[in-house]
Every structure is written in structure tokens, then in C-alpha cells.
Image 1 (cartoon, rainbow, N blue to C red):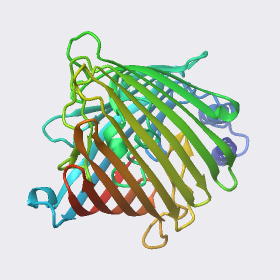
Image 2: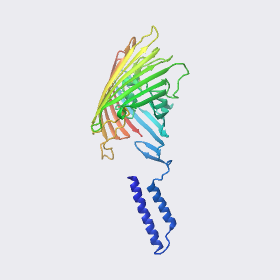
Image 3: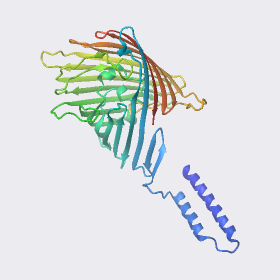
Amino acid sequence: MRRVFHSLGGATLGLLLLAGTAAAEGPGETPDTSLAKEVENYLDEVQGGSEDPTTFRMFWKEGLRGETSDGMFKIKIFGRLMVDSFWISSDDFDSEVTADGVFFRRVRLGMEGEVYKNMVFKVQLDFAKGDEVELKDVYMGLVNLPVVGEWLVGHFKEPFGLEELTSSKYITFIERSGPTNAFAPSRHTGTQFSNTVGSEDRVLWAIGLFRNSDDALGGSAREDGGYNLTFRIAAFFLEDKESGRVVHVGFGLSYRDPEGESTRFRARFGPGTGDRLVDTGPLDAEDLLLWNFELAMTWKSFHAALEFFAAEVSAPAGSPEPGFTGWYVEIGYWITGERRAYKGHQFGRTKPKRNFHNSSGPGGWQVAFRYDTLDLTDGGVAGGVQDNLTFGLNWHMNPNARVMFNVVFTDLSDGATGDLTSFITRFQFDF
């Protein structure tokens, strides 16, 4: 369609220019051949599509993107800004735990792209810490490989857990659940192979070998061992695009060799900063096995998810060998009729039906509920039990901005004991 308009516009411009030239010269006079030649060249270009394949164009699509006309090179410049405020009340804990606050939860900038249609890269940095810059996703890789599909090398999330692998830009609640925070390995440095199989790529498998690494440099101490082998398989069924129905099932398994490093499980109760009131402390472990089960669905404006996590610790003789568990269930509903996006075996960006603009549109409004429980007490380890009940209200002003409101009721036992109530807000913009 764009080429047709260009052609019509070019043809019209050419006729007008030629007519103007003929009128200026008068009957029988020689036309301005240089101008006619210029018009002819223009028409040849727009009608013949002789655009230089290396021409680079920039455009906006939920972010700043660019690509060459032949599609050989693509880049995306992206970022996210999340400002959180929280108010905590409790009759059981002192002011150090219940202090109110405001902070930047995430301040990220990055670039990702594709080179020669078979190589990808991504560099994402987080500046929210203030005194240091953290590496997030920093990797390179090859895609469209036979059998293995995609091969990545660098610092990125291990393939484990639906809520963990869903970007913080798209999670339903301000913070991920306690079990996800305690058990999901998140980002480490390593290599991973992944691919999809079946009709419409219904089944995804991913396997990676990682080393425990920090987020400052993405590296680890020089030592033998200390490798983590992590695997995930996920699939979706009963897909109906007309009603937005899809059912997702997944399973994750991670064998971890601490090799001299202590193992620890802990989680916060409400906001993404402050004390962790359930905490095993450092554990002496020879190896560790993590596994989880994922179940999720969407149907019209309704969505739900459930995950179960377990950790089994193998320790030297005489040391406790505890097993820890946790799970969550969440449900949500779009009041304004949107559907939660599902893509690539995880949840993605939901676009409002009508963006909020000068009060002419409501944006997208979502209500949600989550219950999660985390048990870190077993085998002589008194890490505590935490139960959270979270109510959420999200206002998506447009595809790139949302305001979130969460109320979290926390009950703690078998360690730190007491109840807390947290009210948390987030103002978020990403591109």
C-alpha cells in the first residue's frame, strides 16, 4: 500500500513538474531536459524499489527500533524505569522492619539486536543500586541452528520458573512471589541451548550449564567445580485465538554444585527492599536439587497461574539435609476487556484497547489476587514459614506505562513470628 501511494504521488509530481516546465517554455520550445531527467529518475526509484539494502531506518514499536531495508541487521534500544513507594504497619515488629520508603526499583538501559539474521546479542545494565552498575542480560548467540535451535553464551536467566522468566515489565504484581524469590536461580553466567518442536512451536525445551556469578562483573571466583545444570520444558495446549484461550504446562529441574560456597534460601515479605524475615542462613551443602511445576491459563479477560517449588539439600555427614517447599496461585481479570498476552511460553506485554489520552480513553484496568506460601523450616533448619495474601489493581495507561497498587497481608511463623500489612505502589515506564 505504501509503495502504491509513493508511485501515485511520484507520478502526480512528475506530471505537474513537466506541465509546469512546458508552460514556462511555451509552444514549440525545447523543454528543460535536466528537470525531466530528474523526475524520471525519481519515478524509477519509487516504482522500481531500487532502495539501497544497507539503508538504515529507525521507527517506534513499543520501543525504539531500527533495521536495514534488507532485514540483515536489526537493533532495539530499550529501557525501564520503576519507582516504588511503600507503607508498612505491624504490631509485632519494630520500626526498622515497618519503616516507610520510596526508591527506584529498576533503572535499566540496554540494546539488543540481530546480525546477518543468524546472530543475536543483548546488553542490559541496571543503575538502580546507585553505587554500582549491575549486569542483567549480557549475552551473544546464534539462532536458527539445526536441531539445537538457539545457542546463547553470557549472563542471563537460567531456564527455571514461569514467573521468574516473565519480565518484570509484565508480571501481574509489583514483586514476584516469595517461593519464586527464594528458589528461582535467576541470572548467572553460562551457556544454553533451546528450541521449539511440534506444530506452531507448541513445545519448548531449554538446557544450560552455568557458574554462580555476581551481577557486578558477571564472573565467579577461580575454582574447580561450582557448575549448575538447569533444564526446562514447557508446552501450551487448547489454544483458541478467537477467545484468547491457552493452557500452559511446564517443568523445571536444576542440579547445583555449590563447591565451597554456602547455600541460602530467603525472601522478602512485601516491597522489593528491606528485611528478609524468612531466611535459612548459610547452609553447608555438597549439592542441591531444585525442581518446579508450572500451570497457567488465559481465557478471554481472565488469567490464572500456579507454580510449585521444592529444594532438596545434600550435606556432608553430620550436617542437616533439609527439604524446603513453596507454591503460589494467582488469578486476574481485565475489567476493560483486554487479554493477558502469552508468547514464547511466558507472559508478555498487554496492550490496552483504548489508551488513556486527555481523559478520552480509560486505558486498561486489571484486578488480581495471589496467595503464596514459603516453608524454610525442616531438618533442624528454622528458616521460618511465610504466607502472603496479595490484592492488586493495575492501570495500564498505554502499552508502555502502568501504575500498580498492591496490598500484602503477611503471616510469619516457625521463626520470626507476627503479622504485617504492606501497601505498595509502582509507577512504571518502559520502552
